[in-house]
Length: 114
Length: 114
Image (cartoon, rainbow over all chains, first blue to last red; front, side, top):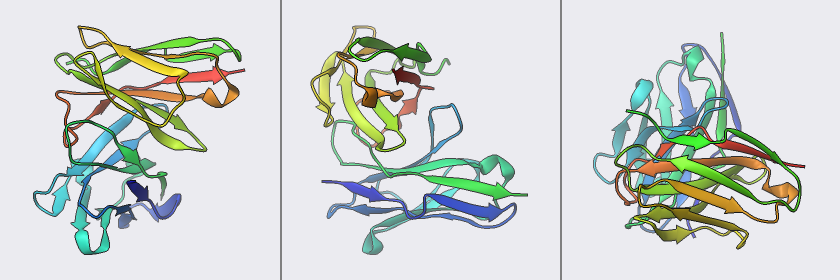
């Protein structure tokens, strides 16, 4: 069965510093991969997705992620953190197919220090 | 364009009762999925509906059920509520039913079971 591992339940960075949130998936066939962000008392918002086009995917709010098949990873990065980036981030996978079923990682809470 | 709406936003029930949650997808979207979010188990897929048919189901007991109407609106029902059913229930919609498509999430219904 598919699974997603997010290393680090909490990540703290200074404003302006690099953001790196880690995600590894388990699948012999590259799945579709997604990063979502959740702000307090809100639903999830899609940041970016990988669906087997370019391995470097650019998303909203300056985030990007690189799909590395050899490492089964899809880490999320942002060159310079803003206070507004403080939120919980979820990596998710779905099998290729006609039905939607997202498998989520446990989430990483990003704290941004002024 | 209005986003995904969920009603009610907050709900308090007691053990043994049943509850119905409602989700109105984005206009034109035909796929609706439901997820349960708890601190202990994280985000878990409940089921997905497309054109009034359940296309996929997660690993939840039969007390959890859902349906979709001809206008794509969806409801989920939980019978014989247990304390562990306290959670944020998220609904998501997408234009078509395909695992690479973006899902748009609603703000959720927070259910508290006493």
